[in-house]
Image (cartoon, rainbow, N blue to C red):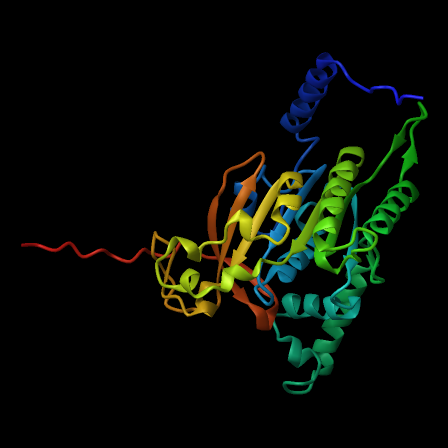
Length: 330
């Protein structure tokens, strides 16, 4: 039997759009604020529900820290929202992620908290205990056991159903949920044969789930190896910038992402001048360039931040000055 075609009228779409705009106008519907104004400004005043944000970067650039700061700041920055968090953490144990939160909250290093850089004082340990007690009120759950894309979808479907409710008219109401994946290549490629097949399936899965449920996906990814080619790491070249084609599996993830972000720390590549605009970096490895490569409902562009890995924090900084061009006179 042929599967019946499902469609909706244009009228339904316009009614839904007007309801959404009215809800935002009255402040009943809002985006998820992140800790950074520049991030919120580049998007629709934050991360919208029913959306996918993909963040790609080299290892040790700061993408996991950005994800952690989005999650740790979500409840404080969005106090009127009712939502949950489900984190797929295949790379880092939950306890390590928690210690990173203590580091950011107390403004001390991870090593110090582990008594590897001076002994952790009783006073600071009690501060960690108090922070942990306060965080336990927040509905955050972790998945640490590796899975494939089909299992990833099944877990999310089960999670959304378990935390849903039914209204007086019998309609099922799903709770807004932030879902993070750190990172995409740690999903099992079976039964898709290879990573590219897996990423294609993942992209389709993300789109299907975000259309069905009020989910804000934050997906971390790696970059292709050609980003490290010598010609791309020469001062003041266009190739310094992260491009959408640099995201590993970009063909699979780009079309499914509502926001695609590429991160770079040009100082780590010994660059003094970044990109054709020749932003003055002076080989400072703490400067983070956040490239908004795709913003379905916002503006593409670049914003600059400072990484503080010892405190597990990222803060906004002004756009660096550009190298002055000397004009030759005859």
